[in-house]
Amino acid sequence: EVQLVESGGGLVQPGGSRRLSCAASGFTVSNNYMSWVRQAPGKGLEWVSVIHRGDTTYYADSVKGRFTISRDNSKNTLYLQMNSLRGDDTAVYYCARGTYDFWSGYFPVVWGQGTLVTVSS
Amino acid sequence: SSELTQDPVVSVALGQTVRITCQGDTLRSYYASWYQKKPGQAPILVIYGKNNRPSGIPDRFSGSTSGDTASLTITGAQAEDEADYYCNSRDNNVNPVFGGGTKLTVL
View 1 (cartoon, chains in turn brown, red):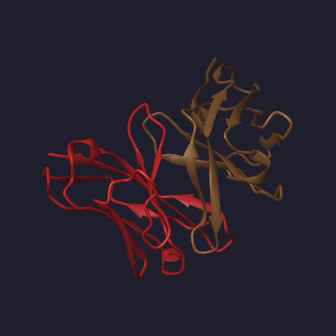
View 2: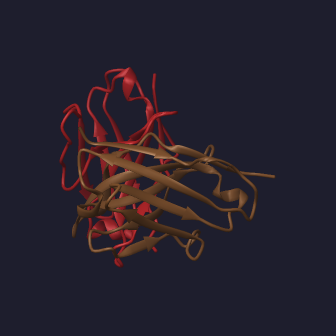
């Protein structure tokens, strides 16, 4: 069974750092398009980052230069390193496995349950 | 980056048909995928590509595109379909983009 389990959320002070993890089972992260999507309280879904099978990455303008997506193939785990956190980064962060085709672009197919990151003093 | 615009709120009577729309220039060239999102739950992919449903998604869900507008149609809406729905597509630089979401109320 394909499964994604996020961890690493919690309360962080503004300006602080946090690393989110997404442990995958039932498939290999290295062979898939993987992403992070977030949802701030009362807001819609927002793209954060995508890592392609060939390690090409995408970052939303709102996190570019502050967040880094990576994966550890030996642990079959996806990560999101978040630095210089701000209040508007407060959100539930979802890890997702997706697919890509030219006519649709990248779209997530399987999602984790999410982990809440709260940035507050 | 491109924008995808959705009506914030849509309502439908139980058992009736409802269309949720997503408008954007890039939809003239590319397909939208659609996600159902309920509070406290992970999003679920309900439609992708021209009009494809993942395994387990009821056939009352369908997708279509006309011009710059993609639509998600629910034929015979059920109480459990009450949720937020998001469209997703790509821009000309292959960057992904979500619509702002539509809150569907089933009356």
